[in-house]
Length: 67
Ligand SMILES: [Zn+2]
Image (cartoon, rainbow, N blue to C red; front, side):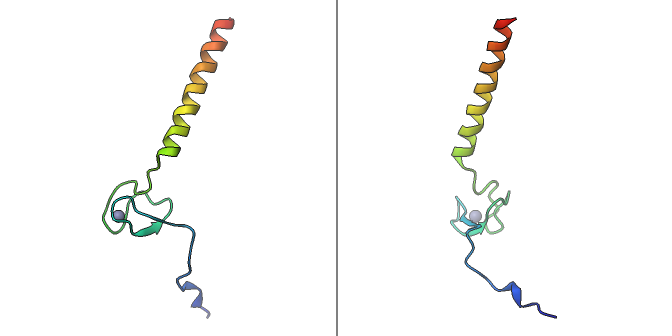
């Protein structure tokens, strides 16, 4: 019976909500405090995906032009 591991610890898994700035768990799809969806929506990830998609489209058109 040792349930003392539930102490609050400074976690780097916490990031401020973009709306209410409350530190909440990274990866949450919704802020439990203010209810904002995708509280950590970061532009970098979106840009990365756009880059990947562009690369795939470009690669695909290159392959198609070869055949
Ligand atoms: Zn919030």
